[in-house]
Image (cartoon, rainbow, N blue to C red; front, side, top):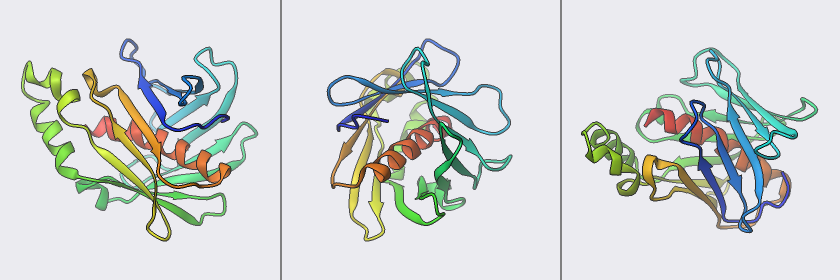
Length: 198
């Protein structure tokens, strides 16, 4: 992906059955179009260069049938693995926690939900008729990405919107281009998983 200028906005399409979204940089240019494959036993997404699906940039797929503690491998257009994002199993039941791993299977970054109560409140209120339509404005979780030294490098926040369709990724500290790409791709996969959980 080129032109990773922060903040980056993820905008979900609510008019389609599939779980698709567009990623746009600070200039409003589309840097990726993410499409989740429907009716797959294993999670799988394709990252395209634009909404016309002109070019496949990356694919991300689960490495096992059940995704409770699955890791998700990221492949470039040449089918070369460039990293993974891995869910932390039982620890993610209470508060979302993932590891972003490099191409050598070395952990590089940790993704953690800042406040689990926000998601719990969202799930509870989401079950109330009429009021549930406004949960996208009331409850907006934030996810922090930290490096091995514990420094926050980027933050991902759900923005106030109907149906929770907008997310914004902001940079806190500089990281190199290759890591930058891996972090953004990992968060793309994570958002799809977390939206499904509620």
